[in-house]
Length: 192
Image (tube, rainbow, N blue to C red):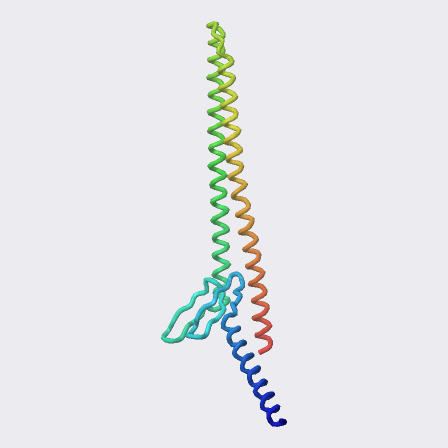
């Protein structure tokens, strides 16, 4: 019975080894790679993928893929971010100018309406007509509409400012990442 026990044990060990090997291969194939934010997985050649920053320029010469130098990529991305930042600031300044012009027009129209209404009131009183109540309600409606418009414009301004703040945070995060990458590149160059 001794040889039979050894054969069973050998069969068991071989089966366990085969099962673990098959399971590990299956688990690795089904494993979902986590891609960090701002990165993308590029298939360089069949069966070989490389993790690269989003938006990096890749050119193909025959079977060879040429990836943009990291310094060039970082410089281009920083320039893009600064350009977007400047465009957002210019758009915000333009919106503010438009709102200031609209406020000025509203205030001028409001003054004109008030003068017209006051003139009409004095005419009505001198003619003996009592329409002051209706005029007061019109003034109240005009002032209410003006307040509503001012609140609407202020709300729109507050909607623009968080987007600009988020853009600034993204720019700071990108600059920090660039700094870390440059330090890593310098450390790698120093090791060589």
